[in-house]
Amino acid sequence: MFLYFQVFFFLCSISFSMVFGFDQTNIILRGNLDNSLFMFEKKKIGRVAFMGGSITEMNGYRPLIMDWLEKRFPKTQFSFNNAGISSTCSTTGAFRLNRDVLSNGPLDLFFIEFAVNDNQDANHNHAACIRGMEGIIRQMRTKSPKTEIISTFFVNPGMLKKLQARETPLTMRAHQEVLIKYGVSQINLAREVADQIQKKSLTWSQFGGTHPKKFGNQMCAEMHFNLLEQAWKDRNPRSRINKSIPTEPINPFSYFNGHFLSPEKIQTKNWIYSEPDWSNLPGKKRSRYLDIPMLHSKSVNESLKVNFTGNAIGAFIVAGPDACVIEYNIDDQPNRSIDLFHRFSSNLHYPRTVIFAHDLNAGTHSLNLKIKPNSKSKAVRIMEFCIN
Image 1 (cartoon, rainbow, N blue to C red):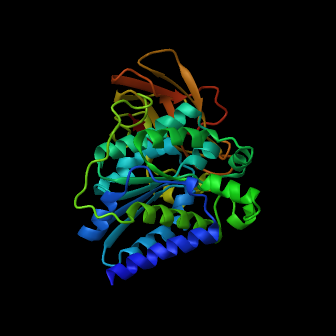
Image 2 (cartoon, helix red, strand yellow):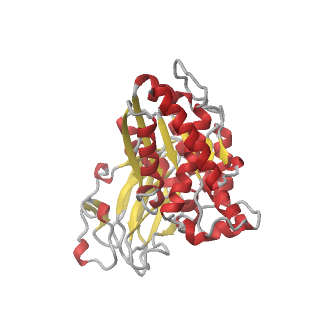
Image 3 (cartoon, rainbow, N blue to C red):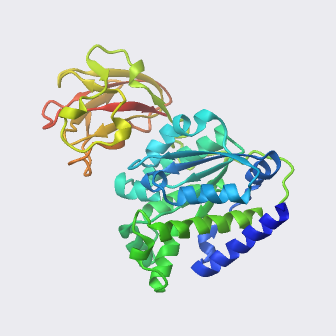
């Protein structure tokens, strides 16, 4: 019976590949995925997590892969973790990885996507993309060294236009640099979509846009099935091994020591740690942020001091229509400022991570911040401090 299932799923992967006409250069196996096969086949246990933005959070490609894995390994007890959070980028991902993914222990298989969010939500430059994505991958390799990782590139209209002009979008270029360095397997759905649209075998409308429709999600899932069957074909692992970690990171300031520091642990009399009065605040709200306390100031004149150890500090915030400009300094250096308002904040309390400094000398530091006196808006709502 087990051999039957193996043959069935292998033939299915071939037939689906023929239907969609995948270019195999867009399905990239780096190394092997033996550790996951060993757990699924021999130990009958599967710990699988998905991290990304709204494309992961929604009922898209993720539940299709979950369903396929359960059918592919019918005797395996799977646990799945949906760690997708709409609008968040790889920077946020690096700081929340421990809380949202690794807090329940090591994984067997980890799916990750942030190419679109690093582009349209965070508007990251190349270095910021590296710091976020390498922060996630290197941290995973360190804390859960037997985990197999697969990264997927989704696509939005701007990225699609570049791909059709035979250019590689910045976020994809940066993420791929990390994936190659760490030997991480990759699904280049973005280029597959661009190529098929140019060949007129697919339309953008049929695919479903930035947040794919059923057809687009099925297409994405089939590419993953193709990769997994390719990786597991004729393999019979008898044990698991640690995945290798490059001696030197691409960027020494990547967030591979990233973690959250709760504002609840900050001793202050000048700021309040409580749930915002959402009913009296204009703008749309997302339910996941409505029942949690956040740190906010009593008035524009109240300063906040945060002592921390590391080489980077930032804040994971909710920025609404009333988001302010913050004035801050680190270790009594000259004041700097950062605008918490985001272009998507006009009518939405929008989650984002702002970084105050990413390249400090490793050690103990102090952050001092307050609302900038001449800021037109007066609100700052901090869910977590981000320390690396």
